[in-house]
Length: 219
Image (cartoon, rainbow, N blue to C red):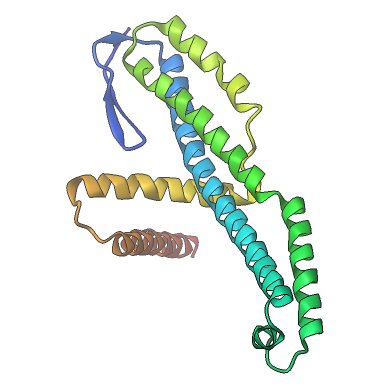
């Protein structure tokens, strides 16, 4: 069957004219690319989030440890200057020791560094898979497409799941990224913050207008 269509995936337009495709297989391929691309964005956001948290926690423990070490080995007069006003040196040393120990326990419990690495690995695996799928949009080999799609579950099953509470936020950020990317292709000098605000205002204004129309129709 001859079909002709242009499909948009991740902001790019793909032409599939004059090729023989099974509609269901093509639809599955398009959906898999779209879902995988969205998951890549989510994994990248989660990776950066937990990497920032891990780095902040590591630096806080290092700074407290350095402060504690300095107070022990420096001259007593300098140690007094490193102690907050109104607190004794011994009490402050105890506070720093307990603080460093407590943060170390938190570090072991939350394991943010490992989670960041897991999300990074998931993003890398899915990104590689999407790169393999995109050329198939212009391939007439249905069996090759089906074989690639059959690997989806085996590839994604071992990956770190995206938290359910973050899913809609991740989807929103992915869609915003696509809209912003398309706009920048035509207007590269656009202020990104202003563009985000305009998109949010437009969509929320549309939502309010739709809600008002529904209320009017109900009456």
